[in-house]
Image (cartoon, rainbow, N blue to C red; front, side, top):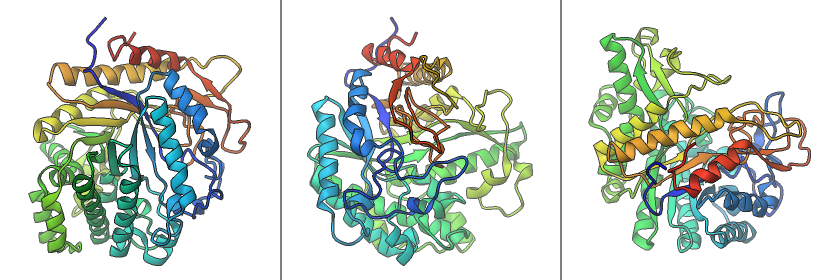
Length: 457
């Protein structure tokens, strides 16, 4: 038996509300921007997903059977506040009390995420999402109410899923903007508004509860494509603008000096006020949460002159011949996972919490157990990389949560891209009976958790 992970280590599963709950027209739920997205040949709609709204007890039993002791769920803003900034919905709030109580009854520690790209449709239509200060205020109001409701039961919180995605060319999609949101200045404005909202909610958590809260990034290790020093410079700038800029706020209460200098030099006015800085001054982070699926290569020669660093990967990403890929061109790089854990912890000294990790593969149920050895191998390699970061590099890690370990539609709505260790019997076009069927990886992960990470065989 190899080394066990520290006592109290958290093992579990992460999901979002729109990818699990369904019941979009039940329980007083309001519409979100996801309800505008209709089914197509490669995606389902969001009406049913895996029907977690009605089947959560069954899925929580499966998590308990896998020995999980942590589950990151999301509270749907439009389920508890249908218009985003109007009256709260008691039926929606009661639903999440039932979910959280059901987890606690199974000795599964709940972790709550407040926003996973599902902007209430009314706020998108009236205010254009996080381009508006009004929506910042509405989110903070929603967040504070959820903290008041649940913080005595929920010890771990994050505000925004993968917050650095608001610094990308696709910022408008995550921010609930129905028009605009594509210019460099608008991207910076959205990213800043989201950070202000995070800071205000985090400060409220620390002022009023004993719960812990941290920021979350979508971390992709980015390497230079060649030995060309310019490739290396671009890789470093990607990390600075996409990751360290936010980490500096989480840890130190200010944006990166390089990013702020760039913004001034390029006249990017992103609505940064003195009151915002006061919120940042109070901010602290109990942990750094992040997702990790893959790494990337940057070829600077492909990037047009005068492109903002936030958009480098739009032009300069190239294939890495040293790593395997799935059919969606997501590669497997566990060494990148270790490097993220170690480098961020070395720089900031804040406990690390990887809360999304996994691989999407197309699978079919033919009546026999799905032999997903590729998934076992993926998680084995990443857990071993995490253990190396802990035992060889000295990183403090709170837990390891896989993504969608009971099959859910991908963020695009594609049911065929399956991450789960439990198969859910449905397709993009046919909901079928939604039966839950454990795969080979189910029992493997059960043994891993039972040994607290010692037995990865």
